[in-house]
Image 1 (spheres, one colour):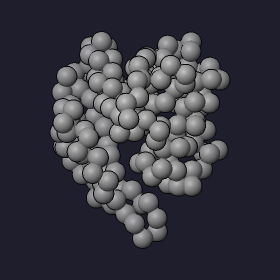
Image 2 (tube, one colour; image 1 turned 120 degrees about the horizontal axis):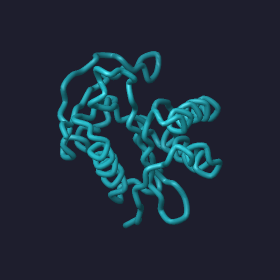
Image 3 (cartoon, one colour; image 1 turned 90 degrees about the horizontal axis):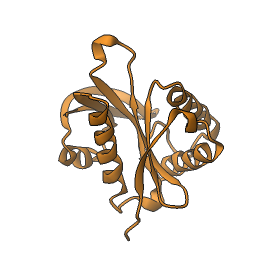
Image 4 (cartoon, one colour; image 1 turned 30 degrees about the vertical axis):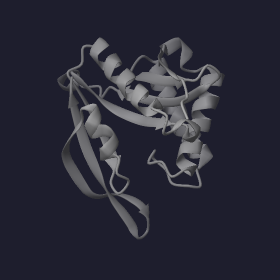
Length: 176
């Protein structure tokens, strides 16, 4: 199934729009409930996700971070952020955070469009490097490595999915 999506950069003055928030909250909850490694486990804790989303959108509205979104012509169906660490010593790179695509659009190339868009945004910002982390055990390296990321480290047992299920956090970097 092919789904046509377009990558857009959210301007700071658009970041607090209720339609954007509603669509991204729906995407985040749906991705969590589908088993996505997006900060939570199913069943999605909607209020916690909403609070986290509001904080992220506030940083975009303040001009601190960049929000790239996917739009399918009707609604927003994906997001990813370039997060500024706030240090002049680290101004040449950003952390890629909150990468997700609505489950209805997964497997259609939408994730690749999102990641290529974020890379283009990073180049436009004059950045030299991007960094992201992933949860082990899901094979996410198979998605990111072909896009130009390389594994640079692992934090063993950094993520506790349940009282008996620990996962490593894997750090990947892309040079621009």
